[in-house]
Image (cartoon, rainbow, N blue to C red; front, side):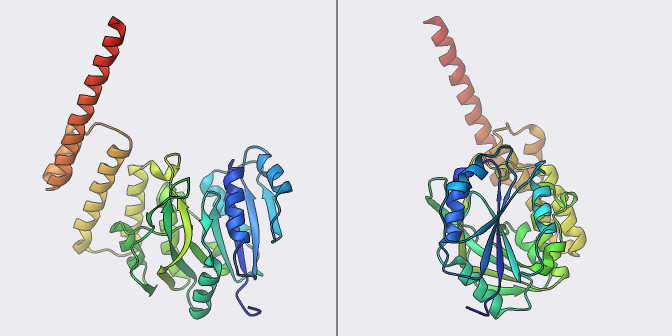
Length: 312
């Protein structure tokens, strides 16, 4: 692999030294040779640095401790600012995700076969914190090259999801930053769309490279309707959607409302139920009413138990 692409693998970490070590070992065990590891430590303590001093791995790595600590999106942008120009590609991983066996080799091969692509979007598995596989990150649909912003945006609006952080970027894309004004914490989708300003991207759903950890503690589990709406507005504006897609966009917004209320354990109020009714989303309407009834029953039972305990 003397002529293989040179790749910088960055691990963004924050106060999770043990998770970082697992992620680091998964990268260190790869069968690809032409890559360098960079650990960008955004932790508020020196615990991670101490753990790294005693770990034994094959590959040398670079380490930087951020001080002061930027917030999540600013941390990624700081990483992008510092991507060295002497690498062909780079990839940003989270400290609680692991690369699967042969991951880097498979991505590098796709990059070699598709030199015009500025990014390779690969697939992965969703796993629990104990490593149990929950399912695939995206439905496998074959590998294809995407040339239009609209096509990527549609994948998001249709709920197919984007595979960040399982993306290999050409180094020349490092000047495209994550912009919170284009979707808040969801601006990684806007970032993916803007890659098309430089060149086409590859959508490689048959290439499984990452185990993506799903946890109740993750910020991604908390749906922010306002920021989702910001992203949708950006996508509608930049991708030239026409009126034929208005129903699809409306459906996406309604699904966001339902998910927000479910994940946050909120009661579905009359205004929300009315939205479901006037938009003929009767299945969501029925589910919402049943959830309200169940929540009420549980609250009543809880009060009864509490009162009984007092009486005893």
